[in-house]
Length: 62
Image 1 (cartoon, rainbow, N blue to C red):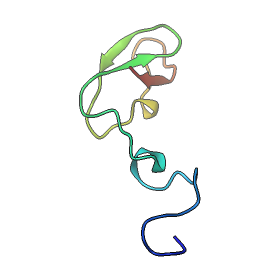
Image 2 (image 1 turned 90 degrees about the vertical axis):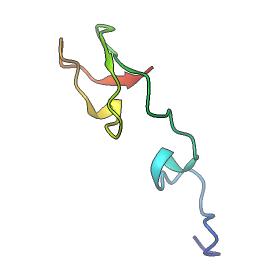
Image 3 (image 1 turned 180 degrees about the horizontal axis):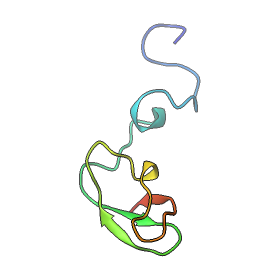
């Protein structure tokens, strides 16, 4: 943040939403990338940090 005004190099992944100010919100589902199983999204827990309860693969946000 060279100017101390909140700007900085693009793509550094700083802060929530990876620096782009976009988040998915509190609702939705986490979907398994392998078997398509879905579970409700838990607020404050990114889907990418969850494992599918059926097959153990990585999950993603719907």
